[in-house]
Image (cartoon, rainbow, N blue to C red; front, side, top):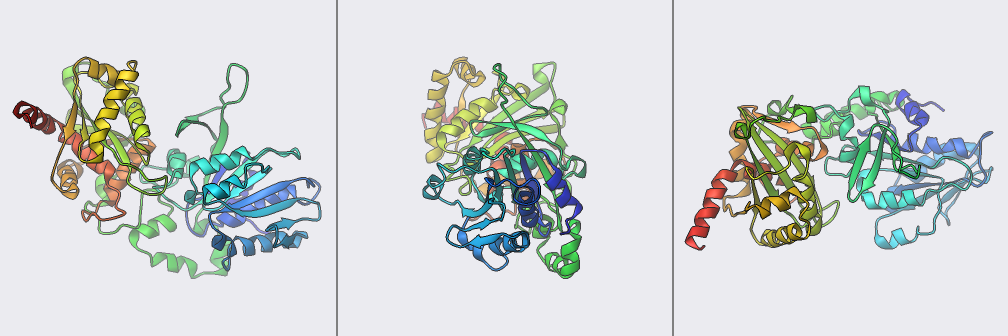
Length: 470
């Protein structure tokens, strides 16, 4: 049984969570299934071992060349017999590896009492993070092996996995080879993943974090597929420019959109780290504008993003930090207060903050003021207490035209984007903006950035409306 260097890197990785792949043809599913073999055959076999492989739907398991066919080709040479009733491979050692789906709350409830030693989630970008964490909670070994989670994915900037891999990418959205397999540590706090460079422990000595690594793999890493199907790479080359960068190059900043408004060269070398964000010594050296573009965010996979953005004008440059996510109204409010609390752009009385105030968004203003009254410890609450105003923005210009107001500083390369997942997603949306709008186009980040840029004008309009009693 032959494996590529990248697949071997996965098999040797000691992290609890490993995300493998990030492009087409890298041998993702094959490698993940190989990882379980160490516990089911040979001198280290565990008779009580129970592994579980998950896809989103049954057709993804059963289709020709799907996980069922691939798993049989791997496990049957080791004596495994597939039981169609229980949908599992049974090994001579007594170990079992099952094929499963999870795509609904009802299906999730079927696993409440389950107990797995190891998990594989194929195409994890199609799953909700809550479901992945739920399955991880069912991972508690009764046979003495270390519980592990192995996941595969293709590049998906709209997936929750984008925040997991962002640190591993270069400024153009491609995996940084020097970071492949580097182990980081995380814990889930609310709806966010908090990252650390080492394991974290509580006062009672209990470990608070899990380990994670991203190992990218693409077609050029899979010499076996290139030999067995030499034309596969040629077929990928026939994709659109954007899709080719995703599936062949492994770029996480691309989408299927083509014909974009701005050339990619305008967005190169614009990312900055936390220590590069300006800290002016004098208040009059800079001006900061905050904007909130709320959305109902139907689910983790569907609906528009709610965007929270900070734009700092310092000298000739404009510095951008953002938080983009699909989330319900209550979470939008909480995220706003946390965002305005961050050290590098903690809101002060000199700053301006506005919110789009049309239809659903108008209700958000009341929720924000109510939250401020209930949580006076936040910087944004104190901003309101001292007379700061939440500017209601009613710009009747079409969204596509509002975003085009960014054309000058984009072409002049005057933006600098803070290197974090939220701002990275905003930058990706800018790169993919085609000016045509329509269903399925995600441009909430650019719209919030354009709102920030116009905030002084919106303030004048807001005050003028108040004076006129409009």
